[in-house]
Image (cartoon, rainbow, N blue to C red; front, side, top):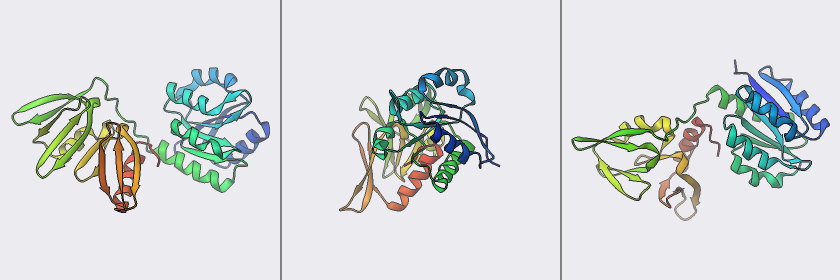
Length: 251
C-alpha cells in the first residue's frame, strides 16, 4: 500500500481544478487538501500546513502571477514539497526545470499520463531518502597513520588511479588516502555521493551536466569545478540514473 499523498492545487481556471480533482479522486492514496485560484491566496495556507503537504499541482500561467517564480519560492522555503507543473503551453518546460519538478503535464490532462505522474510520486514518497546536510559536518579520512577530519561539503570528487585514491577539494588542493573507494562510499553515500564509474565518486550537488560524446559513443559528467568524468557507458548511465533517483533526482 502506497503512502498517502497530501495534495494541493493552484490554478486560476476552475474547470481545470475540477477536472484534475476528479481524476485524482480515482487514486485511493491521493488526498486533495485544498485548491486555490492564486498563489497569493494559497501562500498563507502553505506556510501553516507545509509539514502535511506532499504534492503541489501548479499551473505555470496564472493571472498576474508567474508559476515558475512560485515554484522557485516553494522550493526555497519548503524543498520537501513535490512540484508538478500543469499548463497548456509546453514552451515553459525548460524554464521550470530549475525548480526540479517531479513532472510536467500539458493540459488538457490525460488520465493515462497522470497515472505515470502518480506512480512517480508514489516512488518518491514511498522511498523518500533525504540527503543528510553536509554543512558543518566532517568525516575522518585516513592518510597513512593519521585520520584527517575533512568537511564533507568541501569534497568535490574522489578518484582512483592504479592503487591510489585521491580526494579533490574545493580549494583546488587534493590528497591521497589509504582508504578504499568502498569505504569512502559507505561514509559519504548518505550525504549525496554516488559512484559515477568504478574509479570516481562524487557528490550529486556538484553535477552541472551530463553530455553524450558522439565520437566515443559514451557519456561524460561535468562538475561545478570544471572537472570532467569521461568514459561512462550507456549501461553505466542507467545505474547513475537509478542512484540519482534514490535521492529523488530525475533525469
